[in-house]
Structures are given as C-alpha cells and as structure tokens.
Length: 117
Image 1 (cartoon, rainbow, N blue to C red):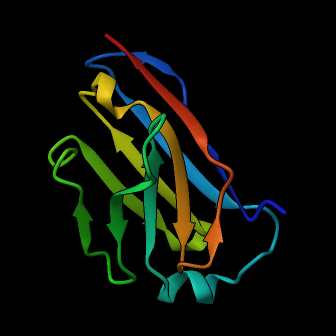
Image 2: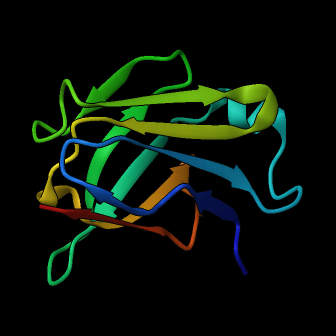
C-alpha cells in the first residue's frame, strides 16, 4: 500500500535543476499529524544503502547531508501535507532513487533521479 507519492524525478544533465514533490496517497494522515511531524528526503544509489539527504522539523528547521549543502533545499506545505526538494547544480553522484518520509512512519515508493555527465 503506497502511503506517499513522490514525483518530479527525471533524467537531467549535470549542473541542472529538479524539484521533487511528495504528498500522501489519499487520507493516510491528517493535517494535524503533518504539522507535528518531521519530514525528510532520502536517496539510494545503486549498490549503496539508503541515506538521509535532507530533513525538516515541524518548526521548519532544516539540515542536510554534507554532500548536498548549498545545492538542495527542503521545504514543506502543511496545508497540502506536502514536502518538496529543490535540487540545483546537480551532479552525477546525486543519481539514485529518492524517497520521501513523514513522521518516521510513512514512506513513498520513490522517484528516480538520473544525472548525466
């Protein structure tokens, strides 16, 4: 059962930009739950473990993996129960399947990002 739906993944050239979006599939959780929950974007490159890329707390505090600092921006819209990841100056090493998480409980099926050199 898909709980979150990610979109926006694509094939992009190095140096380009992408915007990933994540929203729940149906009414899997309430706006109230969204407001009190941290959210994050993770990625899994081929042959590697899933890693945290960016996280945003319920109060809006953000933190990023060192590899994406200054290039990626995570944001949220509680009313839409959505989470976003703006990716700029992408690099081939950003290639992978990107997953959204809300409240450590809800996951999406992932969206593929491929960066060509």
